[in-house]
Amino acid sequence: MQTKTEKILWVLRILAWIAMIGYTINLVSQIICLVISFTNPEAAKQIPGVVNLLSLLKYNFRLYVIAMAFVISLSAMSVYLWQLVITLLSKLNLNSPFTIQVSQKLEKIAYWLFAIWAVSFIDKKYVDWISQSVGEQLNIITIGNEFLFIAGIVYIISQIFRHGIEIQEENQQTI
Image (cartoon, rainbow, N blue to C red; front, side, top):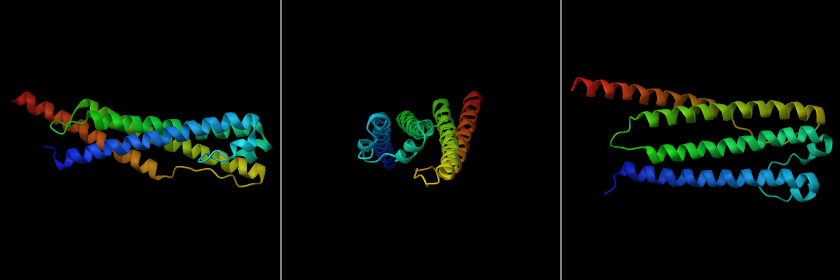
């Protein structure tokens, strides 16, 4: 019989899979949009759910490719982040949660959250700079500062797990 916590973990695994699949679809559509925009920019406008930077393409091809590279890299980083979360949730054993693998996964997730925030911050500054050059406000979805905060929290939790592992090892040595 499953405990309430095991049921919650099962639901979280399902939600993580849904999120990863969603981000993967978004990543693929952005790549397709980039490729199509080289040959047929009007057709690229019709692709649902992608960032529309096509006005930038008319202004400067190189700036457009760089902006799309930021968008695509953020999507790819998000897919990998969700894959890490799925792996963490799969390896989590409620009977013995304080393992080095869980601690390392949590730390890695914290680093990736920080990296996503940093790339998003640079992307926002880049798009703001381009918007001033073009004289047109470009619409791009950015990740807010909450990712920095969440990265800090996840990192602290990973350190708590690491300390729990040390205490567990000390207890086993004294027995």
